[in-house]
Length: 139
Image (cartoon, rainbow, N blue to C red):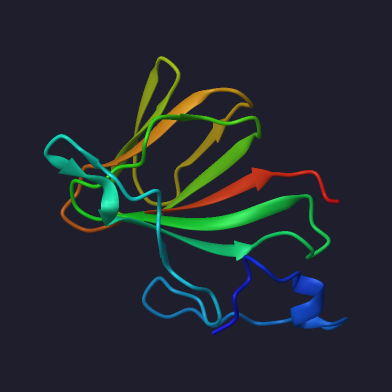
């Protein structure tokens, strides 16, 4: 399996294009990792995973990640300094952005501004999966 976190895409791909095959909400060559595992009271956010699909070195000005919260899973409340575009892929959930709460389902899109507090919460029996496109400065 390709570890995309520590290698640049240009090293992996050379000058050619590449296909990451999709199967069961996973992509070939992309590792699934626990997202910030911890326990808060009786709720365990270990049930949230992340796949870093596109990261540094691909010549893009964005990262593309796929997150998935199992039933009753959630992410921590965070405040980051990059703009996020979120596209819901499966399940239903709530996305909290500062004082707004959005009830979302597949193909809904939420833009999270730079510096906004945000959190993702699964509210469905099936996993709540979403793509996150994160604005990044290419070095």
